[in-house]
Length: 322
Image (cartoon, rainbow, N blue to C red; front, top):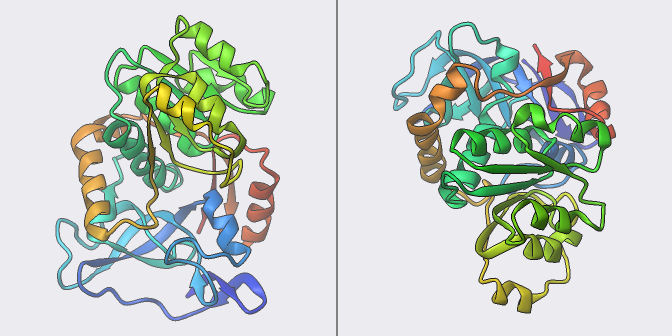
């Protein structure tokens, strides 16, 4: 089968053997793949948790039809239309665990389905499970114009947030954040953004920050969070290190929580997907939770898709179609 593999000369389309499901694994005949920023690092040869390095089939989320079941796979059958997260998604066939599947609703395309697994799982966990957002509270999403950022704002709105703020450093992207739940759009490169957040929250700060930027924003985030508020660190696009004002952190008694899928067990990931199904899945089925597709590329044009993502001018998701 054809797959996008990182090898000795970098990432390239390669012919490899079709995988065989074992245990609780499910083999998916892939029809569309969602692209994610973490893919760029692995395409450049970096390791992402247990994934990455020579011989790695790239890609982290995909949609298609169930082709074969491992002997212990449950609650799914051959022929089901599904979306899933897992490694090795940039391929004609990909394996995932039976607990990382979501059934594609009737009428939803494979392309739209491929945009959802990582955004739903990452942000339901960050906003609801870890972030503890309650109805009537306020939330700021740093890096809101990414696919997961747009989903975070929608989930916050779905769960009854009274104020949703999104950040983007691109003016055109900021102008569109209101379409996905933002009451206020800020530029995190603007030195006055903390003041804008405080003004919008009567000087108190937000209850919750979903931070995908980190780095230089760490102390501004602390200043923009209310006393006894929460910051959930999801991503570090602005840098993995920063000078932290620990006195400000302590004075505001902020809960600062880091999350990642890289160190989660399969049991933890299954629990996250179970939580999605029990809580927000009906909103995804009806299209209330959805992501825009910036562009769809044929799978054999994946190099162009990587260049398009690397330019960072897109709004929403980039999808590969097989």
